[in-house]
Length: 132
Image 1 (cartoon, helix red, strand yellow):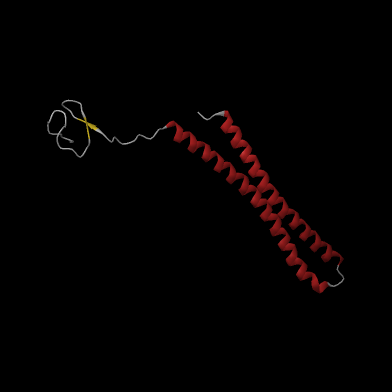
Image 2 (tube, rainbow, N blue to C red):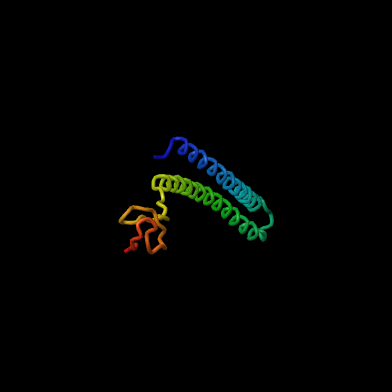
């Protein structure tokens, strides 16, 4: 069973990664908002109508920044959630099922003496060892 300490540490790690991805995403969103705002400002108040095409491309770039910001936030939150949960599950599975080590010594079926697997005869009773 997972300890409460591990659950809380996982929750705090998820919160920390959510904040990191949130900050990165918000920075991109703010940059996009400024680009869109500047483009709209110049497009609306510009006396030169030939420069509108340039500002429309900036408008598109601003919306791309906003979209990328939201995507980074969403993917970052989801990815960190699954990563931390998989780490907790992996730790739980590894702790609950100990790995059995292969036997290094074998026993003689006649006298019970410990012998190595490459011996053909028991050193105690002298009987031939059968490993089948």
